[in-house]
Image 1 (cartoon, rainbow, N blue to C red):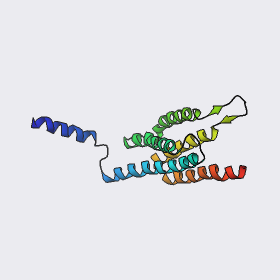
Image 2 (tube, rainbow, N blue to C red):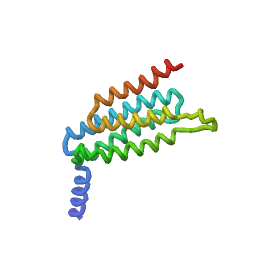
Image 3 (cartoon, helix red, strand yellow):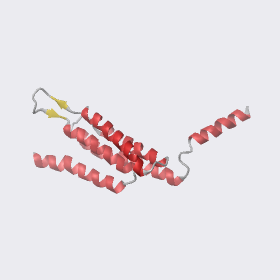
Image 4 (cartoon, one colour):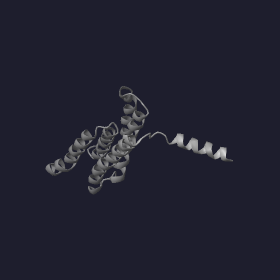
Amino acid sequence: MDGIWSEVYSTLRSEFSDVPNASELTKILVRLTLACLLGGMIGWERESAGKAAGLRTHMLVAMGSALFVLVPLLAGTQLADMSRVLQGLIAGIGFLGAGAIIKHKDEQDIRGLTTAASIWTTAAIGVACGLGRESTAVIATLFGLAILQVLYRVKK
């Protein structure tokens, strides 16, 4: 019986060996946490504006996007080969954003375009976090918030 448990322990240990050291763990935690926080900032703005896609949606989009690029990078995928991952991610997020767009009977009355764009931007911010481009992600978030807040006030 001792041999079985030893084998189970060995298998479990190998299954969770994708984080070999504290440096890799820190990298994962920083990138995913920052993606959640930055996505949450944009989501908070959308939610406070009463939009359908809010805090949780934007946080999940940012974290998911970061995870989609972080995992292949940690597995050894070369940056040049990430283009296929990015193409799929961009197309998939486009479908998610399309679900936020509503066209009413009046052809001029289309709603949800800004929310769809914010979801798309949040995915790009998540990608930047996942690729380790944290400063770029922070700058993009600040630009996004300025567009959503400042330009909305100027428009009014």
